[in-house]
Length: 183
Image 1 (cartoon, rainbow, N blue to C red):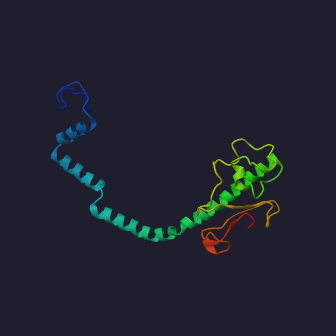
Image 2 (cartoon, helix red, strand yellow):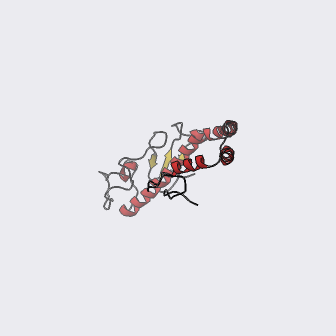
Image 3 (cartoon, rainbow, N blue to C red):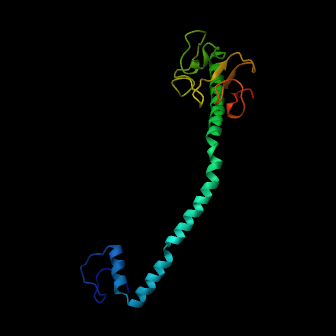
């Protein structure tokens, strides 16, 4: 029989109000006989973690971290290279939009600034208000260097767009290598 409203014969005083859940459970536990209390405590011990079990889990996590962290340590440079490639592709798309609106790509002198500000020189009849990039200034590569823009291009007919990579100098290998739109 459930006894939570203070009915007669349930061992509680009839206050007429519900008791809070944890208090009600505590009172039910105290009303139970000693044998039931012992079983209940044993059951609760089975549900809890011991200090030894927690320590084993922490040691296992530490061992896993020792294997995983070194593999991820070199990833920031990979992420910078990927970001530079994505930005170059995005700027190529913006330059295509500029070309469709105005009939030609910005000149090398106008540079990538023509994507964010209307050029002072040259014929730009349909320059899009607000620019072709979501930024207020031309982007720089992930290493803080400006992207190199040439129009007409040396490697491509229309334009060349590149980053000098981590080294900031032409050429190089690995993370020092140039990131371009022609390779």
